[in-house]
Figure 1 (tube, rainbow, N blue to C red):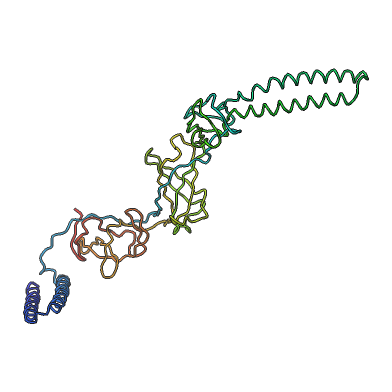
Figure 2: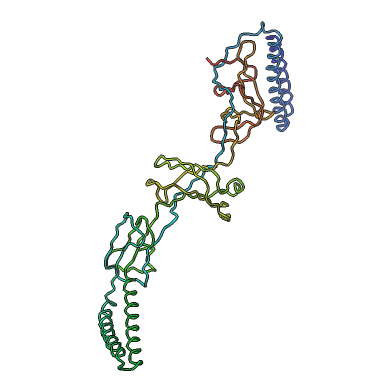
Length: 385
């Protein structure tokens, strides 16, 4: 075999020298480059012919080949397992209910504040009292007039019961009482509107108002009280539009909160019906359980399950190699008591993280070389020890 190799190498050298000499005589640079490229192809083919010839000779007469040192590799045995692909997205926690407290009237100067930032409040709880001194002096005189009108009505009623007086006088007295009562009720309603109550239960997330400042509907969002219902939270994210057929209401999602080291399973509760023209994505939500560690605007990693293959054949993605025939892996095969590296053409499928599904080419029990496969060739002796 050594003589055959020397002969092939000698022929190659002569061919290179001959072609090189002819190229020098021509002086045509373009022709020289073309011939050089052709020689490189010939050299690559001759190298492959050498490898093929070595392999063929070794098969026919193993005794004349020099013992090859086995290359150390690591292997893993293929076994069916559940393979799931997830779409990894970034989301954030949102509250279902957020309320900015506003006055029932046009507002006024803050006279008293009964809540602090972070306090839990109940629906209907008094939060602020606004200055109503401009209206309060009107209440006393009206109440006095009402008492007088009621006294007059009693006297008119007594006289009427005794057959004294006229019905017109009695009716007029009743009307006066009703008019005054309605005026007092209206004034009390106006006065009550200077008390600001919580529209829902939750946490006073913001209290951006101080005694003496003006509180009005126009300034409530910037300078007021924000209440957040932290018992009713959701996580939301945007999904690329090419997944529109794979994500629907009820789709499983895994929500991870890296900052607090918590992970939970959830399902999609809402899918947006409109594609955002700028981001080319649609909106989804998943409800979260009540948890003191979850806070609105908290970042979360959302993994949406969009593919699952039970009993799938998988391998580490880095063991997949490419040749002129396509994708292949190297297997460790026992031949005549020796471990030999053998090429195996495969059809890759879906990939997730560092694992890839193999659609065809591998069977349970195949032993895949996972480390040390770089530089291995088909038929090379290997060892795992």
